[in-house]
Image (cartoon, rainbow, N blue to C red; front, top):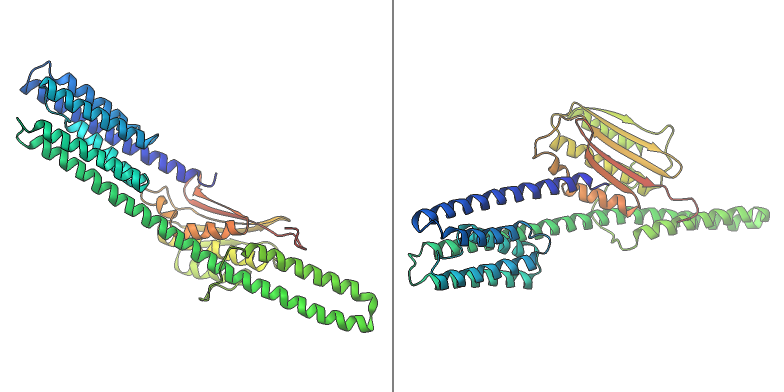
Length: 385
């Protein structure tokens, strides 16, 4: 549910790309058929048209089984080249088929594992070389050059997109690691606080045992509770590393949250802050995460929702969880705004929330505006976790 909006954008983007390719394939097929019917004979164009249509159709459905689609496209292309050479038909592949094969090569180089991608690129090169050899006796060089250019274009685009995807994954991983390190430091400080409390409680228990032996059970219960809380915090820090750089304090409470909102309101749209009644008694790691969600959400609004007039920050609590929600009223965006809301700040925010067992949901509101909603579970007292 939390990725519904991102999924819709991805599906819409794929549909647009598929539509553009289908239009390009149809145009190339039509132009080629008319050119052959005009310069050769009205009976020559169906062969290349049918063969090109088959390969174009394979390219349009390539995402289901990309490797097999590429193999099928190259097989059809090779058979078409041999048949055209043997029957003295117009040389293949034509522009439409060459474009479709280029799409298969580029898609493979972008998404397939290295060996498979290289194999597909090699298959495309073999088709280009075969077409060139078949066309040598009577070719002017236009068709071989076109085939070589389309193959090189597919290779260049595929490698370029593969590099961009790898860079995006690397940056996202770096953001996640950075967020884990910051959270690890905060949790480390929390555990140190609990251990200090255990030591103090143990020292007090020794004094109580001398003068009031009947109160020892209560002191031991306090020690047990503090130890259980420390263990619960330790479980959350498993797998995380401590960072030595400066980080936001683990105890960023409601006062710091109010100050954060006031600073934002002084430079941007009006903000309405809603907090639970009384002073919340959340664990420090939950308090700091609430602060971080609000901070990152307000930063995104200042960057990507300049037309917003009002912002609402709502923090609510029940027995089991804390919910923080940040919404703005910016008007419906163009296609370039909301995708930017899913940047690397959101990656770090989600990493922090999920590290505490919570959930993060982001997306457009039913009307204008954008919403960020994080739900953080409150650990049971005494280490029930």
